[in-house]
Figure (cartoon, rainbow, N blue to C red):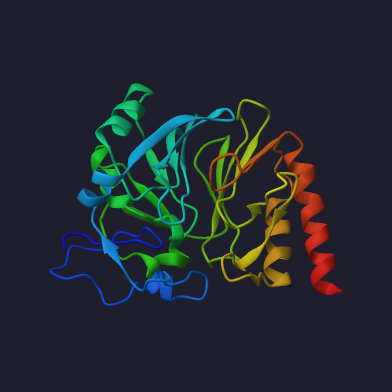
Length: 267
């Protein structure tokens, strides 16, 4: 099986004659093995069953699989002064999606929040002309399709330009990353992946070590995240999937959520 893809988490693995017995991403307590056991697919098989949805998601261009697949995150194109950044990644690449991105000036970087969304990152980079993939070095062990296209960064802050900053929030994974875009259209935006997750009321965020298995994040990790985000202004918070966004009042919503969570876990 060429470059097997786990059907539960969507991670693409290196080229092997037979797929691994288990997916380490799903064996980890932050994820889960599918209820039918470990199953695999390929990029070609995905393309037979899925297309890519390419449309506006409350002011940003979103790309996601249709019908949904695995964790069902969507990627976002951010046209910033640091270049065009593809935030997050998907298991499927299509010619239509590549053409849509090239029509908007192409992609200069792929940046990904954490290992659950690494997906087919190397496949995407190659399709876009070999663009660099930015990952935090703390999550290096979770890369199962190594490539020289991957650039690991370190520390808590990586400034890509005056208005674009990668922030190592930690907590969910050691390298869990958010991207802050100061010059987003409505006065700054935060794209946190799962480091903090926009909840269903779309007025708060929450903090979990494992979202599917309901393991709360350690208070000290939430405190670190709170301190790290101090001083960053943003109106909007874009969650990991379609419509899970806080549009307007994002900074206040995050601050209130920090206070609510830390009070709850201390009770």
